[in-house]
Amino acid sequence: MDSKLFTPAKIGPLTLRNRTIRAAAFEGMCPGNAPSGMLFDYHRSVAAGGIGMTTLAYAAVVRSGLSFPHQLWLRPEIIPDLRRITEAIHKEGAAASIQIGHCGNMSHRSQTGCRPISASGGINIYSPTLVRGMRKEEVYDMAKSFGRAVRLVKEAGFDAVEVHAGHGYLISQFLSPYTNHRKDEFGGTLENRMRFMKLVMGEVMEAAGGDLAVLVKMNMRDGFKGGMELDETLEVGRTLEKEGAHALILSGGFVSKAPMYVMRGRMPLYTMTHYMKCWWLKWGVRAVGRFMIPDAPFEEAYFLPDAVKFRENLKLPLVYVGGLVSREKIEEVLNNGFEFVSMARALLNEPDFVNRMQREENARCSCEHTNYCIARMYSREMACHQHLSDLSSRILKELKK
Image 1 (tube, rainbow, N blue to C red):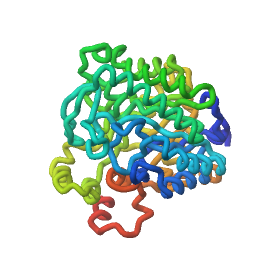
Image 2 (tube, one colour):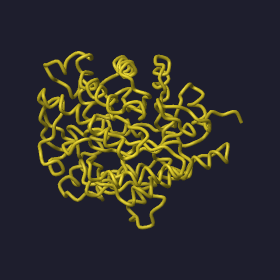
Image 3 (cartoon, helix red, strand yellow):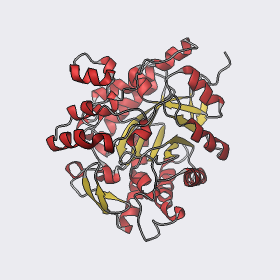
Image 4 (tube, rainbow, N blue to C red):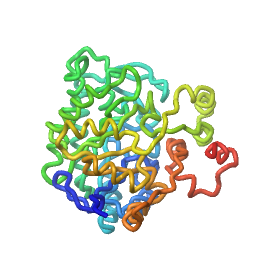
């Protein structure tokens, strides 16, 4: 079978052994905001499973960017532990990447020690928290924090860095008119709303130098009325290409407004609240969660129609992500002109999936798209329900439904 899937390809200065990337889906495996043995074992297993590059997620560039106590925070004292992970990934023949970003209005005072910040002030009912708009000098300082984070990434032995500019986190909050109501040079027109992103890219590209691949995850649509649509996001893509990004990862959705647009399907709310420790948040989500987290239909490669439009308008390498669980669909995506494919849930279900695809032309992973892994990861480490034997009958009933 003539296929690009298992041929090498380049992202900037980096060559991957094949066209597969483990997407930067939040593992929840960093208690105390530091790498754990579980994080080490998981990424080593994915590398051994044949992936071209595996991506650690979601590393805050500063403490104010944290949302969870089990989220990674990039700082000098964790570099030795990160280096052990990159060395293990390299021994298995894969490349190592790390996603960097800032949660913005999704951060929590309990983790950061300060009031959450964003492009503009207001109330984020999804956290829930009061949010402060960033002062102008803070915007410039935050961009520099991304550059400092990239220097730590290089010290830890990573081959690539992924800048998170999507999903309604801080860079995305500046880009979207839904969250950016500023009246200065960082708000208003799209050119102004892209200004923070361009500052970040300037710092990142300078820090990366010529030996670190730079990828950017961006939204093609925010996923709700009043958010960004294709006309603006295509311009964001063109701007990132001009700023020197080596590849774009094409995604969509807003965690604080349209979370299932990112992942698709239905959120198992009882399962999600089962793991919550805060009693009032638990009952609040059970009462209004179906309104706050509306369903979005799942189908394989659900972002492909929009992503094809980006392929038609951009020249740099593009990474497709979203709903890939079979070799057949992956081949279709690659044949549409995309250089790489990215997966998360499929590899949580089956870390060896890439190796199996190489053996089986019709390989398909057994992920059931129940979103148990998503419901659980905000309170505990990400896990596939098919690997667990201690789930309650009520959780199992909800997942079956």
